[in-house]
Image: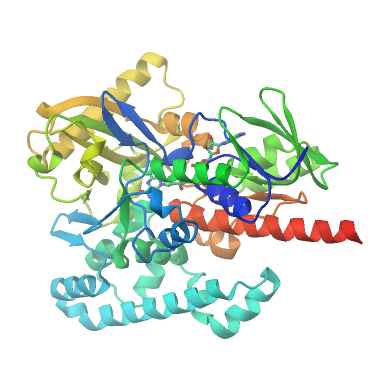
Length: 507
Ligand SMILES: Cc1cc2nc3c(=O)[nH]c(=O)nc-3n(C[C@H](O)[C@H](O)[C@H](O)COP(=O)(O)OP(=O)(O)OC[C@H]3O[C@@H](n4cnc5c(N)ncnc54)[C@H](O)[C@@H]3O)c2cc1C
């Protein structure tokens, strides 16, 4: 039997692509290496506590959000229980402490009250952002083939072209030079893993709008409920999803077009098209069978910069974290207004000063923890290089040391934290590599520098006919929302390819 499309990997990109294709009556086979769906974005359980392994907050899930709309359209929202969030995060700097609540007008108000001398500049900045968002939405809705995109951009969305050449810092500095205002405004850099001085303004603004200006929601029981619902829907649509099914090879007709995949168990499945949600490096340099294509991609991909990794501590608490002072679901703690310094703290392993993000999912959904208890997740950025050469004993010790340090720092804001810990688990960059099957534990695919963002980002189309990429490593980029868009676009590319292939067979 030949499938219309095989999807490799049940991360966000793979699941969405698989769902969309199965909705279009294509017969798909989704093969996932792990026993559960979700990739990085899964949940795990310890002694009755359910933890999000990665996700802190997901944008576009509010009542009018893009992902929620899509789930509604496909009747998947009915099986899910959404908890609308009141605010995104409490953000702390040495001299500032404020809450981002999804309302742009409140954000402008806060900035103007806090930086009165910058009032006019703040208006100019938000006006420029408004113009960008308008043009960005127009561009996305245009749905043009790629050869027409550039012409459209010149005439209808010129500000996109200008902004796509800037870093976030360069964009903001056109309107204000106030270092503290810039630092607070760009606090969301932590969701992209690159300081504003290197971060693409394009991706920065898109992520900023998603979390600062539009409401969003949590999914009761954990985000994994969403992925389980998508798997059920794909199966309901008559397609197949198999777990513990790692793909080891993509077989091609002499590198020209895809033919089949071979799994670690030695099974071969034939297909007309493939969408790979495995990381781009594996997909194009390990899985593909053609040596020439592998060698070309090896050169090309080696020149791209991978994103940073992370260290996370998961805590099951004897009491709700709110009772210790966790007033909001996310707490961002910064010791400096300089994000380059913040970023460099990760390289120098300065765990005393690096930015700290604390997340309390059980504050939104008490079903995640045993009755009357709480949970927390603490995250910092970290590097694979810091962990890769440690012996088993050194690794264990270091993991404990870093976890203790982060708990000590969090305790300054949440007094009594250490006495109330019942369960503790930690994940290092090696964990990100092992469970996320991600090279060097990169948590956001390739970095979102100007050179690796927007139309400069690694294409979803590949040198092999019928092989497309989806997920954080390709366009548009990481994050559940980014990978959702990537999955939709990969499905469109596969549909276009299948249509063309069918037409040429008829001829
Ligand atoms: C610590 C951390 C915090 C984060 N916080 C947030 C957040 O708050 N909000 C947000 O939106 N995003 C967040 N992200 C980013 C987000 O989780 C990812 O960008 C997104 O989930 C990646 O989805 P993906 O489609 O790239 O697939 P991935 O998650 O990379 O999944 C790929 C899947 O493919 C499978 N696979 C790989 N190779 C094979 C193979 N050969 N055969 C079969 N299967 C294979 C893997 O097992 C995996 O299931 C965070 C990430 C991390 C790590």
